[in-house]
Image (cartoon, rainbow, N blue to C red; front, side, top):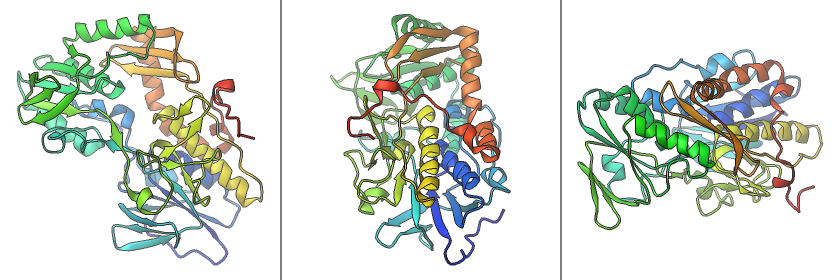
Length: 400
């Protein structure tokens, strides 16, 4: 498949999808499959041809090799085009996107799926002295550093799921290294008591020291400073605390929330520019329980729903409201242990959970599922349109 943006015949509806993460890939494969016989050109823009398995970047960070998943290979034969490059500007008035500051792509419908990255700007010293897990390059750089570290100390900042998985993976793969997990909440704070206790016990068995209720105020080359003047020595700092989105949407004049995410209506269209759909981490999508938080389990359904909505609109039909309910929180604790917390649609914990080997199997199945799911959706698009809608938890009063 050529990565060039070919000339589109007159009368063809141009759909441009920005970002090939979990949500963007779902949108691209679904829309290409659903519009094969229509005068529609689907173009996917992404900085790399390799698909990034963000669910597995903690493995890359400890030197483990992952499968090479090629986006152009997946899209071959679907009719969708692929353009490799960095999106540098969006002009919502002219309906154009600038790529690498040198190419201009036009659209009739835009799918904004540029995702999020780790917030390294809020706390002094993070940008200069901390590693992040935003992509394979950064994860590989961290793996190289850990391989040379010897019996040093790694401080992982952020006690959310990314921080927990990274701390456990580093402790297991580098038992000679001291690992400290620092966060404002206890690890697994949103889980039920059984799952939370199991997670805490697993971190203890791996030798991970946990400092909870701590806010990091500065990162230095050899330490992190905590509120209250405490200092934690560190040879390596991995920062997983918080995310931010690119300022492109705000600069384009799209209505965004306080975090820069595109505010959408119930069908995932921008409230200010209805020809723009926003999905995944880059969108502020409201459900009955609040705004979605970015995960693979919610991101892929937003991509599918946007594709279905666009296909419906091209046939002169109204898009339907998007509804999604969470159903699990899987957390790996190294390669041989895990915990899975099953949840209500609003992401609050249920009584049920999995631990140990069964949880490992479950987590690995979930982590490996997106790529074969994209392949299946390319052949049978209806297979991707099934996910928990969440019942009363997701129903909005103004939704129809």
